[in-house]
Length: 278
Length: 308
Image 1 (cartoon, one colour):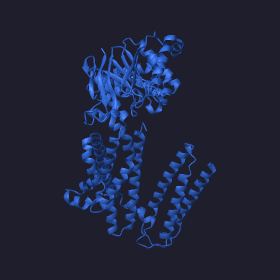
Image 2 (cartoon, chains in turn purple, green):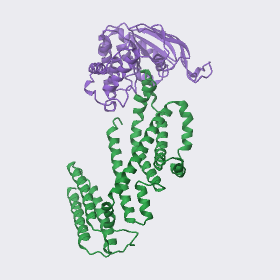
Image 3 (spheres, one colour):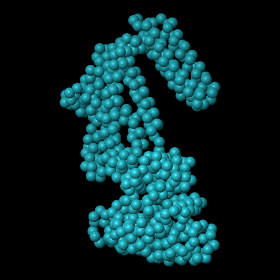
Image 4 (cartoon, chains in turn brown, purple):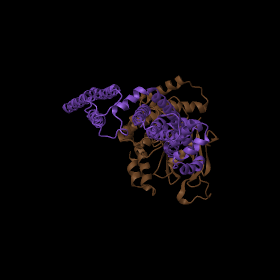
């Protein structure tokens, strides 16, 4: 349970306001994207800024509606936010007025409300503590987000997403604003959580960082100007580490291939190329 | 720094001793019929409050000269007032009452004063609370629902700048009791600024937070209760004191135009009978009431501001 189908999806700005049905070339963000993500796959989406990665995630989350085409989960069309999906954003992942523990509990509460699971207050607290423990943030349970560093906040956001126990996880450049060291630590954490989890969740993970994508993904999709340009399988054994991947010939070849995509892409600018190295 | 604090501490007490000596030993130029005992009690209360601040600062190792400087100024003013009125009668007899007469009012008419304080404070608390709650709740709802915002925000912008006091004469005849008219004036004074501020704040909530909440499936009442209200709360807490000042302004104004109770009424009424000692006593009571309420609101503000 958790396979996603994106069927010939187009998204253009301006149409949400009920404007003309023929999108102009400039406002076209997604241009006929089709993608099938099987249950339990870890998919990374890479591509230059403005390629429509975040828009695709917003459509998956039900925060926006496609101009044409359809997205569905397990054959059921996505028609709004739903709690079969949990998520981690780059910013604003946590509510600043809730303590760490309350943030996680709120996610669990919402998920249980919608999915019809009967969870008492104590159950929620216990689950929240359990997941905070897994991301090593239990000590900060009584702190407010502003008292934590960016990396710690993202750890809590990951704990919240996992604690909601949904079959699909959506990450929108969750580590994009962090320094390299923190980013590596959190990538390791996600890799560890995902490969040791008893039930494999379907993950859609947007990133700028090629080493990050290689570390985490089963499959990498390259998006440019609203279209899928490349779709690569990453058949590397798990568990993976960044160091091991740097020495691995297959991984290095893949990294070169993906880096080349950026260099050859006319829509990628210098900043994109700076960022892909991680 | 410690030495400076001590020097001022000594100066303050020398002044106090001089003041007490002048009050109790120097012959009066003006024949006054009251004793100076209530005045001494008042001085003792002021001294007590000063000592409280002084020793709290000393305990917290704060090198603040504030309390000592303030008390020196207060004693000097008392000395000038006492000398100019009671002792040398330089000031006009009726218009400037002596400190003895003013503080004797507290002895002779404390039941009246207390009754008026209770009347004013209850009216103020009721009007202020209704105005705040309505302003926040309606402001948040109108800020959150675009259609309501588009409808009510322009209307509010027209109505809000009208000073609520202009409604006073009409409200007094329209509403059954004077108290209800005063309450409505206070509510109006507090409501409009709060409403406008809330509409703006609720409608400018960060898109990221909103997306986060929406993607969690948060809707309607949960959205207002768990997301929007906590989001606007720091703004509400910050405006508590300003709104209180507005409420007090409206209250005293309302009381001065036709009430039969309250501090504002007490002052106006004493003024009519040229009892200026009572007028000044009433003003002092006003100061005390507003200071206490202000302290309470700052405490609430500190206590509930958690995340900003």
